[in-house]
Length: 333
Image (cartoon, rainbow, N blue to C red):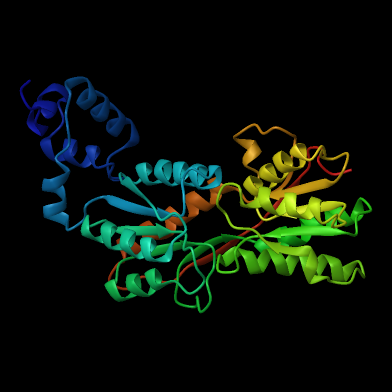
């Protein structure tokens, strides 16, 4: 097949080569109607853009990296999807890197991304004090963090209001008469863990329920770890009447482990998760959850990143904390 050139598209559409070129780059000085017409003809003719040549001219590869713990987690899958959709609106492609929640692997993935000359990175760090963020600062590449970190004054981030989410989840359980509320917490190094725990403690304090550290159990994010915790609690006859889980994946595993013990939700204990992945994926039970809007997080992170790429010589730090809300479906009675 003969290669289709800008001149070929110009001859077909009647526009100049410059207009065709700018339309295919989605430049705003070309009317939307004209851009659509030229892009449609280009697709029909089988035009393939030479991104290598473009990057040589502009110094940009029109690609960004997503660095996340594990995109098999539905929350990360959803926000990665939204990042890709938003990036495409800017004419960018996305490369996804998994870290599996390991700090050393995360740093390697950051270096892998930079070796591919991405123009910027969206990263969900696996630790509060991330070596990867220090490396990115040193490299001088624009990046946006999903979730806050310690000492984040000079770091772009987009995060959900995790403390408010923890508060809403726990208050919801308290208002239904529960007082022995188990918090299946995430690993302490995960940035959102401490904020969700703070919200849990704030709700207990508001209700004059004493905080008992025995009711906060750290659960690893790997498959089966929550199941082990639930089985051990059942064997020890530990008394609880409700669970606030760090995320919906842990909540779903708690349901599974409880079922193995002959327990049901909400008949035997109430349950609230976090992330509201049931909006996109059906689960075994209608789960009450804190909605963090992965779509908004993904879109906003790309908007900030693109602004930094555009002004990469002197970008301004932008930090966004997005609102959360409780979604009820019937797992709390």
